Amino acid sequence: MDMVKQRLQLSNSPYKGVLDCVTRVLREEGFRAFYASYKTTVLMNAPFTAVHFATYEATKRTLMEVSPESANDERLVVHATAGAAAGALAAAVTTPLDVVKTQLQCQGVCGCDRFISGSIRDVIRTIVKKDGYRGLMRGWMPRMLFHTPAAAICWSTYEAAKSFFQEINSSSNNMRVI
Image 1 (cartoon, one colour):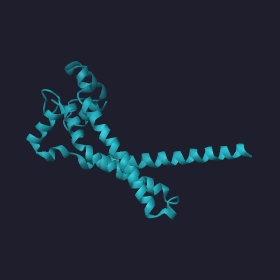
Image 2 (cartoon, helix red, strand yellow):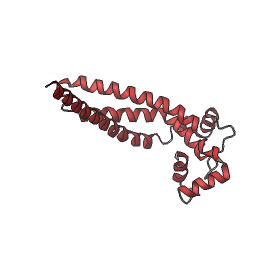
Image 3 (tube, helix red, strand yellow):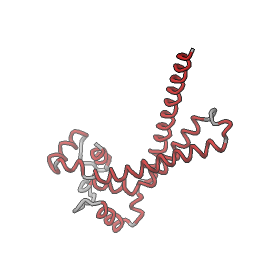
Image 4 (tube, rainbow, N blue to C red):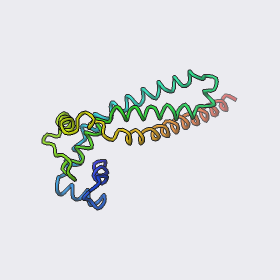
């Protein structure tokens, strides 16, 4: 579905909608076209997740050390800020692989390059040859602007739910003792 989304977002997309895109890609390019960027996606998600979690924990710890006496009062702000930082950094670091993934998903459509082997190395070489190293960072700002609030919301929600269930668990354990 990510490939379908990418193709529908192209400025001169030849597709009328999701069903038209899926049907035409299946007929014209075959089932494998839906997985053209699978290796790149997997390879991108590992560093994204590593940077995301490490940044979140480091930022959260730092923010709580800055003002330990008010850490409980400002818990939401700490989690949202740490989440935002984690999402932004992870998005920025993995943008080159996201560019490669998108190129593989959209190859041959609306004037996008077609790649012979579909290897990450070939796509990177093609991008650098055509657009320089800056081409590997194409779209970094919108990517960061997407992941920053998404991660802030995600981490804040997760931490709030975790606290809620810990309090319920603590309350039920105290009731059993009585």
